[in-house]
Image (cartoon, rainbow, N blue to C red; front, top):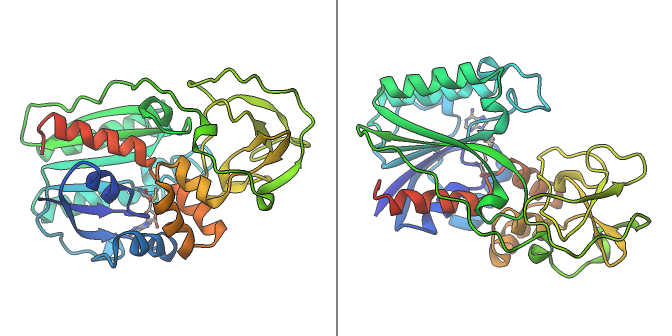
Length: 314
Ligand SMILES: C[S@@+](CC[C@H](N)C(=O)[O-])C[C@H]1O[C@@H](n2cnc3c(N)ncnc32)[C@H](O)[C@@H]1O
């Protein structure tokens, strides 16, 4: 049995990704937002929540820590203050805790693709160097969810750091993607109907590599673009705008325009229908969108953790 601590736990995507691969016990989490915590409790039972990371004195011994720290200061939508920003600087709490606690064998980081752009790469490299000084060998990669079988083109950076070894984690090769957004959808429901469709008829040739924009809804803009369900889904966002809200985009379905339902948002982020129903039973539709827009794609993280197992790292 391996042990896990989820820092910035959200809804517990990390726990589920490990459960999909290992016999695992989550011995503690750090999370302060009641919305993801409601979903976490419904999925896994009451966690041992250490609460606000800035208040934690030290952590118990655990094989793995995950830290999908807030992206607010790194994302394109934010003020771009980087690792020094109020929210993203919480990454240094992970450093503080590593210095005062038994060090885990494996660290898993996730954040927005922007973390490795020209502006933030020097700060990200400093963080990697800091982990090296603590004894960790790190490998990172920018991954689009559909490359590992996810339903969307959500692009995120993942990093695996291993303690006291020369072995480097190898990110798994891309899978042969054989699904498009359509394959993750439920039958249409009138509640999610937006309007009649007036754009070009979409090609039914499936595009496994990208989302396929058909046209703008009214004046367009974020959340007001209409996509084909025969391509990949667009990225869900926590605070989405336009008619689509958190679902990121609108979709052509049966000659009409629809947004994703809360169940569909969970499914496109990798959760089974049964798990999606559990999540949706404790959150409002808006909360589901918020939590899914903030979450790691479960299909992607499951694949990454599978790589850890196959490479005998844990
Ligand atoms: C990017 S989200 C993580 C989502 C998670 N990986 C998932 O799949 O659901 C970052 C999380 O950090 C949490 N957070 C922000 N400040 C925190 C703090 N001071 N202590 C603990 N958690 C915090 C937020 O509430 C948010 O859920």
